[in-house]
Amino acid sequence: MRLEVKALALATGIVFAAFTFVIAVIAVLTGVGLGYLELVGGLHPGYTGPTLLGACIQTFWMFVYGLIGGGLLAAIYNYFSTEKGK
Image 1 (cartoon, rainbow, N blue to C red):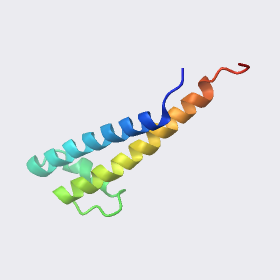
Image 2 (image 1 turned 180 degrees about the vertical axis):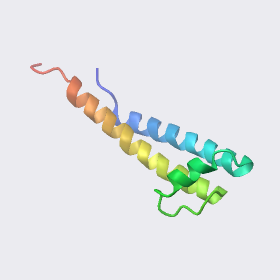
Image 3 (image 1 turned 90 degrees about the horizontal axis):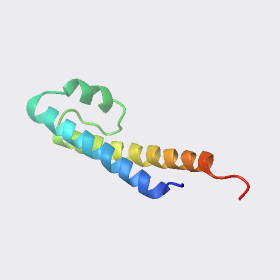
Image 4 (image 1 turned 60 degrees about the vertical axis):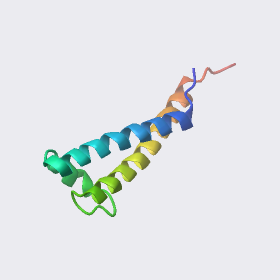
């Protein structure tokens, strides 16, 4: 069985982005999870702090990371799961 690289990459990117956006908005509105935002935000170029703009920037970068990670995961899985000799 082979995985669709584009489909898994897109699905992983969407899940990572949605999770990050929800956490960031909750942190901005309630203050819960600000430590997470500050920890992860330092890794994202353009991050402005715990604001809605910062949440959008983190969402974008997590989508990119999800695309790359999901694509690599599917490609590696496909490489090792191919039946040799057929």
